[in-house]
Amino acid sequence: MKTEVLDKCLELFRGIQDSDDDQISFLADLDVEFQDSLIEPFRRELGLNLISKTTFQEKNDLVIFYIEELDRTIIIDREFKDIEPLNLEVDDFHYPIWYNDQYETDDSGIAQVRAQILFSELFEVIQDYCNIYHIPFMELCKDRHLILETINLRPTIDFEEISAGSKALERLSSDHQPDMPLSKIGRPVFAQDYLHEVYEIIRNFFSPEDQASLLFMLENSSDVEKPLVFLDTGNRLADAFKQLYDANIILGCQKKELESWICRNFAYVYQNNVKPFIPKYLNEIISTTKDKCKRPFLDARFDKTLNKNILIKL
Image (cartoon, rainbow, N blue to C red; front, top):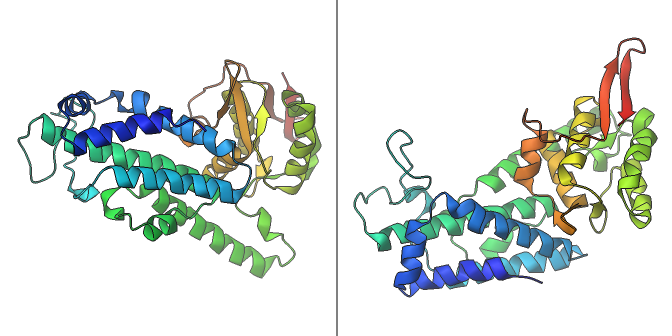
């Protein structure tokens, strides 16, 4: 298991705790670079470590390890809401530099604020993966006495709102369609008329070993024990699922739930390395109008003559 990025973040936090001038200056000067230099590498590293774990308990234990390592390294004594929001019209930086009762500060003060922002952003990444793998983030944090007010809980709150909506849908479907399998609600269900056609189009992008698991997953709207590796770039697979969703060939879920399903069940190859799907990356492809794929391998379109959607393999 690799923890190079985690270790780098822990070293920064220790430096702030120990009033290390070099670490204070580094963190105080860090602004827009936060994402590319720390947060996204942390997301990729944690994602790959989770993919390497085959059971739920192993994934759960890994998340506990990350939570405990972060929490024991730095003491945060302010609530996240105390951070003064940016005034985008006048502020010449990307991340805030002070608390709402603090309007003049030196590098040490800025570094304290930035340390809490980094701390919270790392926990947002952990929350994203907990939502993907159905790991009880809040329960784990409370069991370890993490002060939840020190971080931004938006990812968990959003997920719980979606989960509540899915449960309401389950109750409604159960009342009106008693024979409907509830396990398929809130996750992709492939329209039966297209299911095997979809499989034939995408199966050659997977190894022979993964193809059987792929077919079983599509037929049963289930999850796999270990992510299936798409042997091409991730945006091609994401684009295909987006087209299938927009053509009503994928049913039974919201786009955010489709993104979560892809994260749980697939990885992809980039520059000869296996990469996990990242929620933010999928969201930009599936839930926005951005066209991220220049080489789609299928085209889902409506045929007026047949009066139905058709799939064309490109």
